[in-house]
Length: 279
Ligand code: ATR
Image (cartoon, helix red, strand yellow):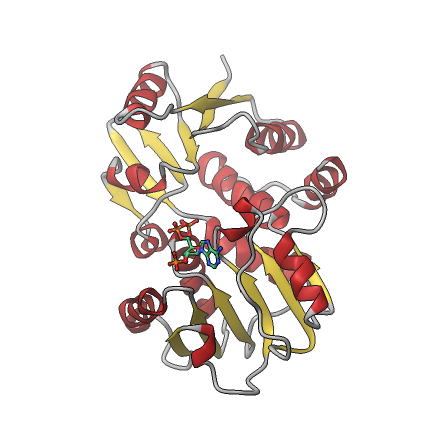
């Protein structure tokens, strides 16, 4: 009997996780099955789906929108990344124990540093958005050595409060600020501009000031899709010389979860190139 894993979300039909984990399992020779489960729109749907999957012998799950907060609440133990993000994207079942992790931020940092070849140490980062995605990215970026992180959000107060809340957990060498885009000092430039808003999902884009991009800067959109996202198109027009969407982050966070469940980290390069040529 193969060990069973799943991703739970709503909607879930478009999820690439079954494909990614299927390829990892094949490449590493692991006897496992990975399926997609729709938690539905009704209240309590996630809890019911999780309980049913555990009762059927499931060993662990990935969790995606809109259940990442509930996933953390369902766990008895949580990693620092999950606690500080206030959300979990992976659960592991060990008898009665449910453990939670959040690999989104580490997946992002790894994609930027390893796949895209931009070491984060000493970099200046503009983080657009102050919701769950931005919260999850902050600590891994700072831990990787970013020396300046400016959180800019449409609702400035939310960015300011996120910066205040997480500042004590960041290395002291990282200069953190939170506010509106308009609050940034005139002429400040960034090596990395990250879109962590949900705007691309609705085909909108947050404003990006022309001139925010340092020479050779990377614009990164945490979502991914067909072709360039609206944010990446805008970033290119505003002077970003390099652009990337979140496909690499998705594959890298999957590899972290796979390693946590199975004790071995799969090679991500082949899967990433397949995914990019398929999407
Ligand atoms: P997630 O968990 O995906 O981050 P969220 O917690 O709902 O989702 O946060 C969404 C983020 O995208 C917020 O920072 C939001 O800005 P506000 O705090 O001002 O609402 C941002 N956002 C969504 N649509 C946007 C748009 N069209 N332009 C700019 N920012 C947008």
